[in-house]
Image (cartoon, rainbow, N blue to C red):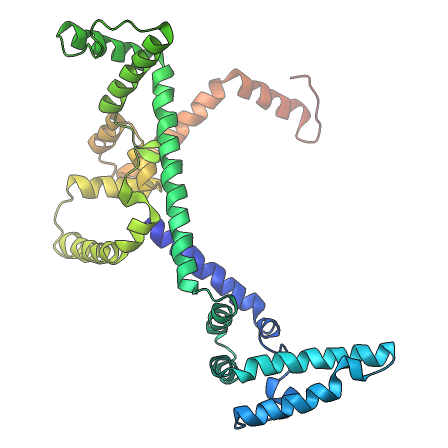
Length: 337
């Protein structure tokens, strides 16, 4: 499954959870809350704008806080005045009134109410917010991939094995006359070291095939590109599934190398990134053992588990742990072992 498909799946899951937990409470956040705007103004849905404005003016004069005396009466009037003003703000505008009528007729369409209300309230199109959000995620995703790749290159540069191999290649190119960037220009020690590290890094980047999560990032891996290619990806998956069923389930044709590797990865329950990070020699050994055959894989899995148990049994720490469990059991904690 692609990153885009996973992200879309999580979005739908979160929205579904919010819809389930928030149903019955979301109406309180919009328009007049639990009150009916028409009832607050004493009008009906068939009332004209003039009738609504007239009713509002009458009620505003009746409940204006300045016309009431006493703390308690003033507070009650102020609360009623706020509700009347809110109801009038909703119904005086044709677009807002249509959105409110839509909510009354379709109370279950909570996502549509959320979009309509905040689009008009904030004067910002939610689609623009989605575009900006996806763009930010894509930028963060691309930068983080470059950081992981840079970390991997620096790690290989620090290992003597790869560093010495890179130095051999640099010296070999120098003897063949393919280097000599500065000629006779005299450089300081810091500049020489910097140039030296750049040459080593360039050699490692050109010759190391880094796979998995630390692979060199590509534009097609970011969210925007994956969303753009999502129809193509889904179509390709449908074609691949139909081809698999036709060739291997119906026609019983033998598996090719690509199909064999897919079955091995499926049996191992690894993602494509995890499987690609396995050494090529190990993958070739999987193919020689014909692990795409279910029976062979199950036998290989048992052998691996037994080998792991044997290694643990030969481990001194594991032996000490077993002695401790045998002598004292799990109910006692000491530092004797």
